[in-house]
Image 1 (cartoon, rainbow, N blue to C red):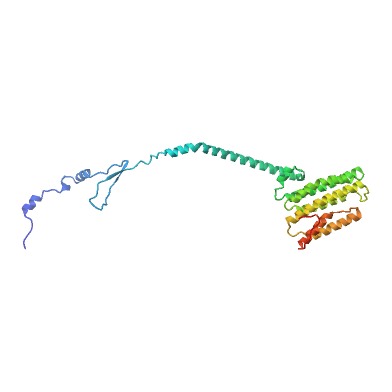
Image 2: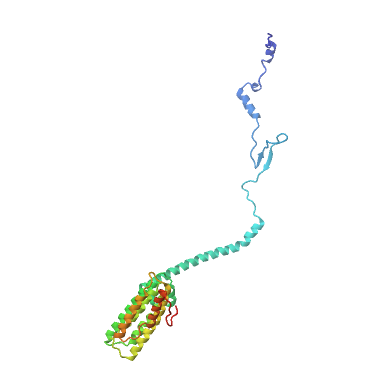
Length: 312
């Protein structure tokens, strides 16, 4: 088998050929030298370097530099936008001013409402609701409990008036004219009519009218023969009779739950009228009111009828 071992001359000629990395006597020094020849990374600047490595045809292209705007630089406003903002600025200022004024007005309104509530509470605490001016009365009547409160105060006022009349009569040691009682008690009629117009107030006003007529009957000794007294009493009953007719109409319209037992009130008024006729000489006690009540009772039972002079 032939021997391919290199001849001593070849080996001798190549023994002293150094390797590229071992050309320098120190290995560390050679590595440092190689590092010095290596390419260093390009410094970062305001441009990014983009290298494309995928092409359909041809060799890869060289680095492409793409300019990028710095982040700190803001876009300049559009001239049209700037002009629009400057044009509406006075109107925006005016809107803000109006908003502030509106807030101030709301605070003032709230303060006034608080003051009104305090005033109404002060009036009710002293039982003066029936004596307030009409414009204040309208405001107070909007409260949900207005009918109950007004009825309580009217009933109390009626009792106090009746007591004062009795005391006055005792002090003079004589019978006061019926006209004095009529004039005093008649001051309650407008407030009773006002009560009847409130929600749920007609039922309460109905009882107050009957009580008002009874208060007049409690004065005097029942043996009145004075024509002036008889005439004053008849005029008073005629007036409260007209008031009662309107109260009945409003009570029927408002409705009640449970339903209003009309026939029971009819019998009550008839018994009182008969007593007054027999003992005090009162000839007419709620005559028209009785007719209207009987008509309402029949209508409630589904019967047809119409009270004379009454239009529900």
